[in-house]
Length: 200
Ligand SMILES: [Zn+2]
Image (cartoon, rainbow, N blue to C red; front, side, top):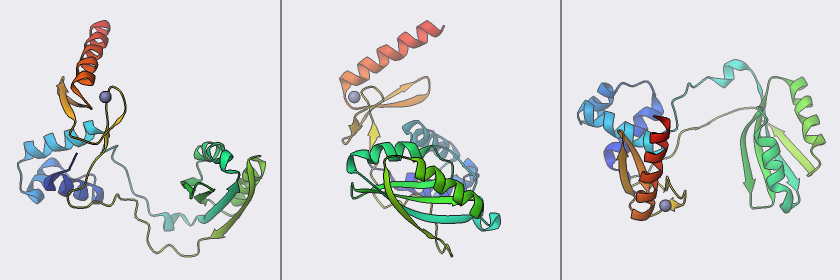
């Protein structure tokens, strides 16, 4: 599904400042406030806008950041990723080339780094690791990169498969739902109404 230019502009503006009002967004995109409101609602329903957050300047916290490369058996990668995902010091986590794990880790100070490395040492699947200490952060872009004609892959709200064609849109109680085909749309609607009837 392709995002239209106004959607893209709204996303760019909100990524810079999530507190812009619908009226601000309308002024800057040249559409009406109700249009902005319904577009933002769509982007939220679709799941593309996951939430709104606060940006804190990490430099002011004087923390210690390391870039970490972990070696393990390819068959253990998932276990290592699962184990590290829950560590709050792990800010970014990747499987790379299907053969190793890389992470960005931020800790309070050297003591906490030692504690974290001890944790690493206790994970059996890790065969070795090495890390580099970040001495200067030049750029850290947490924002998504958006291109003209940007495509969005939505998962079917019924069967959960990714939808590569145009989705079937179903509006129920003012909320949009995206389905991959008419059959999923019918099944989703049935399920939705059943759950709703049970809740009443
Ligand atoms: Zn489906």
